[in-house]
Length: 348
Image 1: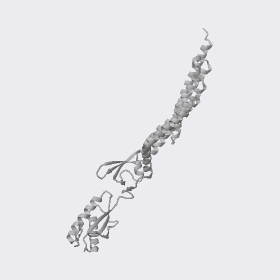
Image 2 (image 1 turned 180 degrees about the vertical axis):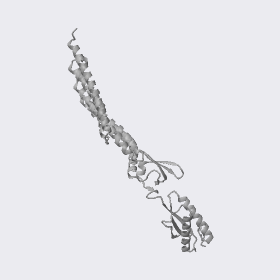
Image 3 (image 1 turned 90 degrees about the horizontal axis):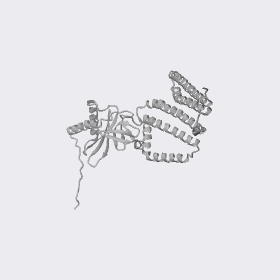
Image 4 (image 1 turned 180 degrees about the horizontal axis):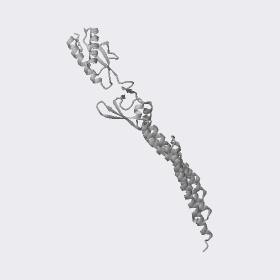
C-alpha cells in the first residue's frame, strides 16, 4: 500500500532528525580532534574556546534539525503550532549564547585565576576566584533571562529594580564582609607583614599565624590567638618587628643615688653590656651598646642603656641578663639604687 503524503512527511522529518544527529556526532568528533590539537599548544585559550563552544554547538545542530523537521514537513498538530513562534527560536539562541559565554568566562577564571592565585601564599585570592566564578555565572544567566523576557515583550523594569534593591540590601548587609575582604586584598598586595612576622596592631602584639579573606590571626606572647578584622588592620598603624631585619633595640633604664659619679656609672653600664654580649647569644656587638645620662630625677640620677638583641623575641631574656649583672656589679661597687622617697618638712 502506497504511503500517503502525511506519512512521507513523517519519514522526511525522521530522516532530517537522523541526519542532524549524525552531523552532531561528526561535530563531536571534530571537537575532540580540535581538543587534541589544542592540548599540544602552550596556551590554554584555545582549549577554553573549544570547550565552551563544543557541546552547545552539538546541541544546537540537533535543535536546528528538529525545528526544520517540524516546520517544513507539516507534521506538527495544530495545538502545538505555538512552538514555531519565532520568539522561541530567538530564546533558544539566547540560551545557547549564554551557555557559551558562561562556560568561556568560567573557564577563563578557573584556569588563569587559579594559576595567578597559586603564586601567592595566602588563600584570600583563591576565595576571590571562587566568588568570581559564582558571580560571573549568575550575571550571564540573569542577563540571558532578561533578554528572553524582553523577546516575549515582558516588562523587565520591575525585575531590574528588584535586582537593584536586592543587590543594595545585600551590599549593605555585607558591607563589613566586603570591607574586610578588600582589607585582606590590600594586605596581600601591600605586604606590610607576612605569616610568621611579629607585629603590633593597636594594643595587640604577637606573631602572624594567618592572613585570611576576612581576618588576620595573631598569636600573642601569652599563646592566645587573636582574630582581627582586616579592615581594622588597614585603618591602624602597624609595627613590624621582623622587617627589615629581626634585630631589636632594647632600652634599659637605670637610676642611681645622688652623689654617684655619672662617668663611672656610664663606664660600668657599657662594660656590663659588652660582657653580656660575649657571655650570651642574645646580643649583637654591632651596633654597639650606648648609654646616656638623661636627667636629674626626683630620687636619683637617671641613665639609659641601649643594647641590640639579635632577634625581636628576646627582650625579656636580654633585660634579665643585663639587669642581673647591673644589680651584682652595683652592689660590688657600692653604687646605691634608690627607691622613690619624699622629704616632708613641717613649718612651725
